[in-house]
Image (tube, rainbow, N blue to C red):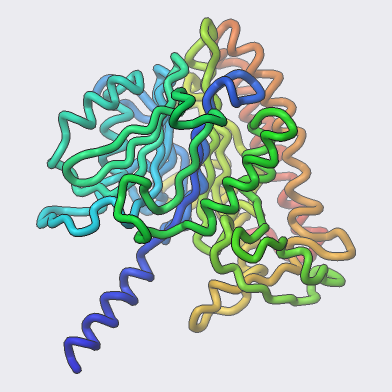
Length: 412
Protein backbone atom coordinates (compact mmCIF):
# COMPACT_ATOMS: atom_id res chain seq x y z
CA UNK A 1 0.00 0.00 0.00
CA UNK A 2 2.82 2.42 0.88
CA UNK A 3 4.50 1.81 -2.47
CA UNK A 4 1.24 2.56 -4.29
CA UNK A 5 0.88 5.83 -2.37
CA UNK A 6 4.47 6.75 -3.27
CA UNK A 7 3.84 6.03 -6.95
CA UNK A 8 0.69 8.17 -6.91
CA UNK A 9 2.58 10.99 -5.21
CA UNK A 10 5.32 10.86 -7.84
CA UNK A 11 2.74 11.03 -10.62
CA UNK A 12 1.08 14.03 -9.00
CA UNK A 13 4.42 15.79 -8.70
CA UNK A 14 5.27 15.05 -12.32
CA UNK A 15 1.92 16.46 -13.42
CA UNK A 16 2.47 19.53 -11.24
CA UNK A 17 5.88 20.34 -12.71
CA UNK A 18 5.26 19.47 -16.36
CA UNK A 19 4.72 22.86 -17.92
CA UNK A 20 3.95 22.64 -21.62
CA UNK A 21 5.15 25.07 -24.29
CA UNK A 22 4.31 25.54 -27.95
CA UNK A 23 6.86 26.69 -30.54
CA UNK A 24 7.67 27.04 -34.22
CA UNK A 25 10.50 27.98 -36.56
CA UNK A 26 9.69 29.52 -39.95
CA UNK A 27 12.33 29.87 -42.63
CA UNK A 28 12.79 32.98 -44.78
CA UNK A 29 10.91 31.52 -47.76
CA UNK A 30 7.78 30.84 -45.73
CA UNK A 31 7.92 34.20 -43.96
CA UNK A 32 5.93 37.14 -45.27
CA UNK A 33 8.82 39.53 -44.62
CA UNK A 34 11.43 37.21 -46.12
CA UNK A 35 13.12 36.96 -42.72
CA UNK A 36 13.29 33.82 -40.54
CA UNK A 37 10.99 33.73 -37.53
CA UNK A 38 11.25 31.94 -34.20
CA UNK A 39 8.19 31.67 -31.92
CA UNK A 40 7.83 30.33 -28.41
CA UNK A 41 4.71 30.39 -26.26
CA UNK A 42 6.14 29.71 -22.80
CA UNK A 43 4.21 27.87 -20.09
CA UNK A 44 5.86 27.63 -16.69
CA UNK A 45 5.28 27.74 -12.97
CA UNK A 46 7.43 30.89 -12.90
CA UNK A 47 4.68 33.25 -14.04
CA UNK A 48 6.74 36.42 -13.52
CA UNK A 49 9.24 36.94 -16.35
CA UNK A 50 11.58 39.79 -17.28
CA UNK A 51 13.78 40.96 -20.13
CA UNK A 52 17.51 41.14 -19.44
CA UNK A 53 20.52 42.22 -21.53
CA UNK A 54 23.88 40.81 -20.50
CA UNK A 55 27.32 39.80 -21.76
CA UNK A 56 28.06 36.15 -22.47
CA UNK A 57 31.46 34.50 -22.87
CA UNK A 58 31.81 35.87 -26.42
CA UNK A 59 28.61 37.71 -27.28
CA UNK A 60 26.15 39.99 -25.56
CA UNK A 61 22.52 38.92 -25.69
CA UNK A 62 18.97 39.86 -24.72
CA UNK A 63 16.58 37.27 -23.38
CA UNK A 64 13.74 36.20 -21.12
CA UNK A 65 14.53 35.24 -17.53
CA UNK A 66 12.43 34.49 -14.46
CA UNK A 67 12.07 37.46 -12.12
CA UNK A 68 12.91 35.12 -9.23
CA UNK A 69 16.26 34.36 -10.89
CA UNK A 70 18.11 37.29 -9.28
CA UNK A 71 21.49 36.14 -10.62
CA UNK A 72 20.15 35.61 -14.15
CA UNK A 73 21.44 32.06 -14.33
CA UNK A 74 18.78 30.58 -16.63
CA UNK A 75 17.78 32.11 -19.96
CA UNK A 76 14.64 30.69 -21.59
CA UNK A 77 14.59 32.35 -25.01
CA UNK A 78 16.62 35.12 -26.57
CA UNK A 79 18.97 36.55 -29.20
CA UNK A 80 22.63 37.58 -29.22
CA UNK A 81 24.44 40.42 -30.99
CA UNK A 82 25.29 38.23 -34.00
CA UNK A 83 21.61 37.56 -34.70
CA UNK A 84 21.74 34.01 -33.36
CA UNK A 85 18.53 33.14 -31.47
CA UNK A 86 17.51 30.19 -29.32
CA UNK A 87 14.51 28.76 -27.46
CA UNK A 88 13.22 25.37 -26.35
CA UNK A 89 10.25 23.26 -25.39
CA UNK A 90 10.53 20.49 -22.82
CA UNK A 91 10.32 16.99 -24.30
CA UNK A 92 8.78 14.21 -22.27
CA UNK A 93 9.74 11.29 -24.50
CA UNK A 94 13.26 11.98 -25.80
CA UNK A 95 15.04 10.27 -22.89
CA UNK A 96 12.53 7.49 -22.24
CA UNK A 97 14.30 4.49 -20.73
CA UNK A 98 17.64 6.32 -20.30
CA UNK A 99 19.41 6.55 -16.98
CA UNK A 100 20.82 9.84 -15.72
CA UNK A 101 22.09 10.20 -12.16
CA UNK A 102 23.28 13.80 -12.42
CA UNK A 103 21.44 17.13 -12.25
CA UNK A 104 18.43 17.51 -14.57
CA UNK A 105 16.39 20.43 -15.89
CA UNK A 106 19.45 22.36 -17.04
CA UNK A 107 17.92 23.71 -20.25
CA UNK A 108 17.94 27.37 -19.14
CA UNK A 109 21.59 27.26 -18.09
CA UNK A 110 22.58 25.44 -21.27
CA UNK A 111 20.78 27.88 -23.59
CA UNK A 112 22.30 30.87 -21.82
CA UNK A 113 25.78 29.40 -22.33
CA UNK A 114 25.07 28.64 -25.99
CA UNK A 115 23.75 32.13 -26.64
CA UNK A 116 26.95 33.61 -25.27
CA UNK A 117 29.14 31.40 -27.47
CA UNK A 118 27.43 30.70 -30.80
CA UNK A 119 26.88 32.86 -33.88
CA UNK A 120 25.40 30.35 -36.33
CA UNK A 121 23.34 27.17 -36.43
CA UNK A 122 26.49 25.29 -37.44
CA UNK A 123 28.42 26.63 -34.45
CA UNK A 124 25.57 25.65 -32.18
CA UNK A 125 25.53 22.11 -33.54
CA UNK A 126 29.27 21.82 -32.98
CA UNK A 127 28.83 23.12 -29.43
CA UNK A 128 25.93 20.73 -28.83
CA UNK A 129 28.01 17.81 -30.09
CA UNK A 130 30.92 18.76 -27.83
CA UNK A 131 28.62 18.82 -24.80
CA UNK A 132 27.15 15.35 -25.30
CA UNK A 133 26.71 13.50 -22.01
CA UNK A 134 27.49 16.59 -19.89
CA UNK A 135 24.04 18.11 -19.42
CA UNK A 136 20.75 16.92 -17.93
CA UNK A 137 18.57 18.24 -20.73
CA UNK A 138 15.45 16.73 -22.30
CA UNK A 139 14.26 19.21 -24.85
CA UNK A 140 13.52 20.40 -28.37
CA UNK A 141 15.90 23.31 -29.00
CA UNK A 142 15.05 25.74 -31.81
CA UNK A 143 17.61 28.12 -33.35
CA UNK A 144 17.89 30.64 -36.17
CA UNK A 145 20.81 32.83 -37.26
CA UNK A 146 21.57 35.94 -39.31
CA UNK A 147 22.52 33.87 -42.37
CA UNK A 148 19.09 32.29 -42.66
CA UNK A 149 19.95 29.13 -40.76
CA UNK A 150 17.00 27.54 -38.98
CA UNK A 151 16.74 24.20 -37.20
CA UNK A 152 15.28 22.19 -34.36
CA UNK A 153 17.52 19.89 -32.33
CA UNK A 154 15.65 17.20 -30.40
CA UNK A 155 18.15 16.77 -27.59
CA UNK A 156 18.55 14.17 -24.86
CA UNK A 157 21.27 13.41 -22.33
CA UNK A 158 23.63 11.73 -24.76
CA UNK A 159 22.68 12.67 -28.31
CA UNK A 160 20.44 14.73 -30.55
CA UNK A 161 18.59 14.64 -33.86
CA UNK A 162 18.69 17.70 -36.12
CA UNK A 163 15.73 18.89 -38.22
CA UNK A 164 16.79 21.50 -40.77
CA UNK A 165 13.89 23.86 -41.47
CA UNK A 166 15.54 24.85 -44.77
CA UNK A 167 15.47 21.27 -46.04
CA UNK A 168 12.30 20.74 -48.15
CA UNK A 169 12.41 17.03 -47.33
CA UNK A 170 12.21 17.86 -43.62
CA UNK A 171 10.02 20.96 -43.71
CA UNK A 172 8.15 20.97 -47.04
CA UNK A 173 6.07 24.01 -46.08
CA UNK A 174 9.05 25.95 -44.73
CA UNK A 175 8.29 25.64 -41.04
CA UNK A 176 8.36 23.16 -38.16
CA UNK A 177 6.29 23.07 -34.98
CA UNK A 178 7.22 21.52 -31.65
CA UNK A 179 5.32 21.11 -28.40
CA UNK A 180 6.30 18.64 -25.66
CA UNK A 181 7.23 15.51 -27.53
CA UNK A 182 10.07 14.68 -29.90
CA UNK A 183 9.64 12.87 -33.19
CA UNK A 184 12.90 11.06 -32.43
CA UNK A 185 11.62 10.06 -28.99
CA UNK A 186 9.63 7.09 -27.76
CA UNK A 187 6.42 6.81 -29.86
CA UNK A 188 3.14 7.50 -28.07
CA UNK A 189 4.90 9.06 -25.08
CA UNK A 190 5.34 12.77 -24.50
CA UNK A 191 2.81 15.57 -24.19
CA UNK A 192 1.26 18.34 -26.27
CA UNK A 193 -0.17 16.29 -29.14
CA UNK A 194 -3.48 18.17 -29.13
CA UNK A 195 -1.70 21.55 -29.13
CA UNK A 196 0.58 20.31 -31.89
CA UNK A 197 -2.41 19.31 -34.03
CA UNK A 198 -4.20 22.60 -33.39
CA UNK A 199 -1.15 24.74 -34.18
CA UNK A 200 -0.36 22.68 -37.29
CA UNK A 201 -3.92 23.17 -38.57
CA UNK A 202 -3.74 26.91 -37.85
CA UNK A 203 -0.43 27.28 -39.72
CA UNK A 204 -1.69 25.28 -42.70
CA UNK A 205 -4.79 27.45 -43.01
CA UNK A 206 -2.70 30.60 -42.84
CA UNK A 207 -0.32 29.32 -45.51
CA UNK A 208 -3.28 28.91 -47.86
CA UNK A 209 -3.71 32.68 -47.65
CA UNK A 210 -0.06 33.43 -48.37
CA UNK A 211 2.86 33.30 -45.96
CA UNK A 212 3.38 33.47 -42.19
CA UNK A 213 3.93 36.82 -40.52
CA UNK A 214 4.80 38.38 -37.17
CA UNK A 215 1.22 39.64 -36.93
CA UNK A 216 -0.10 36.10 -37.39
CA UNK A 217 2.17 34.73 -34.68
CA UNK A 218 1.30 37.48 -32.21
CA UNK A 219 -2.42 37.72 -32.81
CA UNK A 220 -3.55 34.27 -33.94
CA UNK A 221 -1.01 31.64 -32.89
CA UNK A 222 -0.21 33.18 -29.51
CA UNK A 223 -3.82 33.92 -28.55
CA UNK A 224 -5.41 30.90 -30.15
CA UNK A 225 -8.55 29.77 -28.28
CA UNK A 226 -9.53 26.97 -30.66
CA UNK A 227 -9.26 23.38 -29.40
CA UNK A 228 -7.30 20.88 -31.49
CA UNK A 229 -9.39 17.85 -30.53
CA UNK A 230 -12.90 19.24 -30.09
CA UNK A 231 -12.45 21.47 -33.16
CA UNK A 232 -14.33 24.40 -31.71
CA UNK A 233 -13.50 27.84 -30.45
CA UNK A 234 -14.22 28.85 -26.86
CA UNK A 235 -16.44 31.65 -28.16
CA UNK A 236 -18.75 29.22 -29.95
CA UNK A 237 -20.33 28.13 -26.66
CA UNK A 238 -21.55 31.41 -25.28
CA UNK A 239 -20.66 35.10 -25.41
CA UNK A 240 -21.21 36.56 -21.93
CA UNK A 241 -23.50 39.56 -21.65
CA UNK A 242 -20.94 41.82 -19.99
CA UNK A 243 -17.70 41.92 -18.00
CA UNK A 244 -19.29 40.47 -14.85
CA UNK A 245 -21.44 37.78 -16.51
CA UNK A 246 -19.22 34.97 -15.23
CA UNK A 247 -18.98 32.01 -17.63
CA UNK A 248 -16.53 29.22 -16.79
CA UNK A 249 -14.98 27.06 -19.51
CA UNK A 250 -12.47 24.21 -19.31
CA UNK A 251 -9.04 25.30 -20.55
CA UNK A 252 -7.60 21.80 -20.91
CA UNK A 253 -5.14 21.33 -23.81
CA UNK A 254 -5.47 24.81 -25.30
CA UNK A 255 -2.35 26.69 -26.44
CA UNK A 256 -3.23 29.40 -23.92
CA UNK A 257 -3.55 28.15 -20.35
CA UNK A 258 -3.20 29.29 -16.76
CA UNK A 259 0.56 28.65 -16.87
CA UNK A 260 1.17 30.82 -19.96
CA UNK A 261 3.81 33.27 -18.75
CA UNK A 262 5.46 34.87 -21.77
CA UNK A 263 5.82 34.79 -25.53
CA UNK A 264 8.72 35.65 -27.80
CA UNK A 265 8.72 36.11 -31.56
CA UNK A 266 12.20 36.72 -32.96
CA UNK A 267 12.27 38.28 -36.40
CA UNK A 268 15.65 37.80 -38.04
CA UNK A 269 17.22 39.68 -40.96
CA UNK A 270 17.68 39.32 -44.70
CA UNK A 271 21.08 39.06 -46.35
CA UNK A 272 22.80 42.43 -46.26
CA UNK A 273 20.74 43.84 -43.39
CA UNK A 274 22.30 44.92 -40.10
CA UNK A 275 22.32 42.13 -37.50
CA UNK A 276 21.65 44.57 -34.70
CA UNK A 277 18.16 45.03 -36.13
CA UNK A 278 17.13 41.51 -35.13
CA UNK A 279 13.85 42.18 -33.34
CA UNK A 280 12.45 40.51 -30.23
CA UNK A 281 8.66 40.89 -30.12
CA UNK A 282 8.04 40.13 -26.45
CA UNK A 283 4.83 39.49 -24.52
CA UNK A 284 5.44 39.25 -20.76
CA UNK A 285 2.62 37.94 -18.60
CA UNK A 286 -0.70 36.31 -19.47
CA UNK A 287 -0.88 36.59 -23.30
CA UNK A 288 -4.60 37.43 -23.33
CA UNK A 289 -3.97 40.46 -21.13
CA UNK A 290 -0.53 41.72 -22.23
CA UNK A 291 0.41 44.19 -24.95
CA UNK A 292 3.40 43.35 -27.14
CA UNK A 293 6.61 45.17 -26.17
CA UNK A 294 9.32 44.97 -28.89
CA UNK A 295 13.05 45.30 -28.16
CA UNK A 296 16.16 45.12 -30.33
CA UNK A 297 19.22 43.07 -29.48
CA UNK A 298 21.37 45.89 -30.86
CA UNK A 299 19.92 48.31 -28.31
CA UNK A 300 21.89 46.64 -25.54
CA UNK A 301 20.88 47.89 -22.11
CA UNK A 302 18.41 50.34 -23.60
CA UNK A 303 15.23 48.49 -22.67
CA UNK A 304 11.73 49.77 -21.94
CA UNK A 305 11.09 50.06 -18.20
CA UNK A 306 7.79 48.19 -18.52
CA UNK A 307 9.64 44.92 -19.26
CA UNK A 308 12.56 45.17 -16.86
CA UNK A 309 12.82 44.16 -13.21
CA UNK A 310 14.09 46.68 -10.68
CA UNK A 311 15.32 45.47 -7.28
CA UNK A 312 13.71 42.06 -7.80
CA UNK A 313 10.26 43.48 -8.50
CA UNK A 314 8.05 42.38 -11.37
CA UNK A 315 8.17 44.42 -14.57
CA UNK A 316 5.14 46.76 -14.58
CA UNK A 317 3.54 45.05 -17.58
CA UNK A 318 3.67 41.72 -15.73
CA UNK A 319 1.91 43.13 -12.68
CA UNK A 320 -0.78 44.72 -14.83
CA UNK A 321 -1.28 41.52 -16.79
CA UNK A 322 -1.50 39.30 -13.71
CA UNK A 323 -3.97 41.68 -12.10
CA UNK A 324 -6.28 41.27 -15.09
CA UNK A 325 -5.60 37.53 -15.20
CA UNK A 326 -7.11 37.12 -11.72
CA UNK A 327 -10.49 38.08 -13.17
CA UNK A 328 -10.19 35.15 -15.58
CA UNK A 329 -9.29 32.65 -12.85
CA UNK A 330 -11.44 33.68 -9.88
CA UNK A 331 -11.17 30.37 -8.01
CA UNK A 332 -8.12 28.92 -6.31
CA UNK A 333 -9.09 25.53 -4.86
CA UNK A 334 -8.45 22.14 -6.39
CA UNK A 335 -7.95 22.08 -10.16
CA UNK A 336 -9.62 25.46 -10.66
CA UNK A 337 -6.66 26.79 -12.65
CA UNK A 338 -7.89 24.55 -15.50
CA UNK A 339 -11.08 26.61 -15.84
CA UNK A 340 -11.30 30.15 -17.21
CA UNK A 341 -13.95 32.83 -16.86
CA UNK A 342 -14.37 34.19 -20.40
CA UNK A 343 -16.45 37.28 -19.54
CA UNK A 344 -13.40 39.53 -18.91
CA UNK A 345 -11.95 38.48 -22.27
CA UNK A 346 -14.89 38.93 -24.62
CA UNK A 347 -18.50 39.91 -24.02
CA UNK A 348 -21.51 41.41 -25.77
CA UNK A 349 -20.76 44.90 -24.40
CA UNK A 350 -17.31 44.83 -26.04
CA UNK A 351 -15.47 45.56 -22.77
CA UNK A 352 -13.19 42.49 -22.68
CA UNK A 353 -9.40 42.49 -22.76
CA UNK A 354 -9.37 41.09 -26.29
CA UNK A 355 -11.84 43.76 -27.41
CA UNK A 356 -10.62 46.94 -25.71
CA UNK A 357 -7.03 46.43 -24.56
CA UNK A 358 -5.22 44.11 -26.97
CA UNK A 359 -6.27 46.02 -30.15
CA UNK A 360 -4.25 48.97 -28.79
CA UNK A 361 -1.07 47.09 -29.67
CA UNK A 362 -1.73 47.66 -33.37
CA UNK A 363 -0.09 51.08 -33.02
CA UNK A 364 2.91 49.50 -31.29
CA UNK A 365 3.34 47.09 -34.18
CA UNK A 366 3.05 49.87 -36.76
CA UNK A 367 5.62 52.11 -35.07
CA UNK A 368 7.99 49.18 -34.57
CA UNK A 369 7.89 48.25 -38.23
CA UNK A 370 8.70 51.84 -39.19
CA UNK A 371 11.82 51.75 -37.04
CA UNK A 372 12.76 48.30 -38.29
CA UNK A 373 13.08 49.54 -41.85
CA UNK A 374 15.49 52.21 -40.67
CA UNK A 375 17.52 49.84 -38.51
CA UNK A 376 17.79 47.17 -41.22
CA UNK A 377 19.61 49.68 -43.43
CA UNK A 378 21.84 51.52 -40.99
CA UNK A 379 21.78 49.59 -37.73
CA UNK A 380 20.13 50.30 -34.41
CA UNK A 381 20.32 53.96 -33.47
CA UNK A 382 20.46 54.55 -29.71
CA UNK A 383 18.81 57.95 -29.96
CA UNK A 384 15.86 56.48 -31.85
CA UNK A 385 15.65 53.55 -29.41
CA UNK A 386 15.51 55.89 -26.42
CA UNK A 387 12.76 57.90 -28.08
CA UNK A 388 10.80 54.75 -28.94
CA UNK A 389 11.22 53.24 -25.47
CA UNK A 390 9.97 56.45 -23.84
CA UNK A 391 6.94 56.44 -26.11
CA UNK A 392 6.33 52.71 -25.52
CA UNK A 393 6.55 53.04 -21.73
CA UNK A 394 4.12 55.96 -21.72
CA UNK A 395 1.76 54.36 -24.21
CA UNK A 396 1.56 50.97 -22.47
CA UNK A 397 1.13 52.55 -19.04
CA UNK A 398 -1.60 54.85 -20.33
CA UNK A 399 -3.36 51.97 -22.08
CA UNK A 400 -3.59 49.94 -18.88
CA UNK A 401 -4.54 52.89 -16.68
CA UNK A 402 -7.30 53.89 -19.09
CA UNK A 403 -8.59 50.34 -19.27
CA UNK A 404 -8.51 49.93 -15.49
CA UNK A 405 -10.64 53.05 -15.22
CA UNK A 406 -13.09 51.71 -17.78
CA UNK A 407 -13.65 48.44 -15.93
CA UNK A 408 -13.58 50.00 -12.47
CA UNK A 409 -10.45 48.57 -10.80
CA UNK A 410 -7.53 50.33 -9.14
CA UNK A 411 -4.16 50.47 -10.81
CA UNK A 412 -1.58 48.54 -8.73
